Amino acid sequence: MLDAPDLLRLLHPVLAVTVVMPLIGIAVYFAVQTRQRRLAVVNQVKTTISPVVGKEHVRVGQWLSGSVVGLVLLGLAHPIFKTIARENAWAEDPFRGIFVLAMFGLTIVSLVMLYRAATALWRGVFASLTGMGLWLLGMQPGVWRRGFEWYVSHFYLGMAAAMLMIFALATLPEIYKSKRWRLTHAVLNTVAVLLFISQGITGTRDLLEIPLHWQEPFIFQCDFENRTC
Image (tube, rainbow, N blue to C red):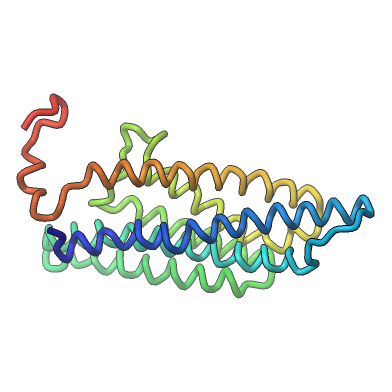
């Protein structure tokens, strides 16, 4: 039976499946359409692809970037605040709780300002602050990083995807200025798609490994090295 902690833990994968994954599919579709139309125009070939497909791709890409960062923050919030509550950090180490709250707030504000920034300098500043906030939160106690297998870690692969989304958001105006930026954008976001696919695999694996809330005291008494209880 699922209790409140289990339901809160499910928010991250539920939103990943219902919000982020569909946005990825739409963004990829519009990206392919945008490239096909651009090639048709260059080669002076008639095409039925709408001229607004590029704008739609940009808009969906902006939604995707914000959704990915928000999803990471949500995924980090559950284990961080659960650990703080379990260790009674609010009473014994109040600075830790204040720092975590401040980092969540500053990261969200930095992301909002990244959307609003008009110059390359400020886009770089707010993109850096957003990424830094995610990493500082990701290093907090309680976050399962799977450091012993970092190359198949849901955390590290997810953070890499989030960094690419932040970079894409910060460099969006540059794409219209040069072919080199467009190529860089296409290559990095192809890598991002592969990382998102890996998230589906590693996320499913991690869900299988996480016991229900009421089972944790018993499961964690097992010998995971020898696979015995």
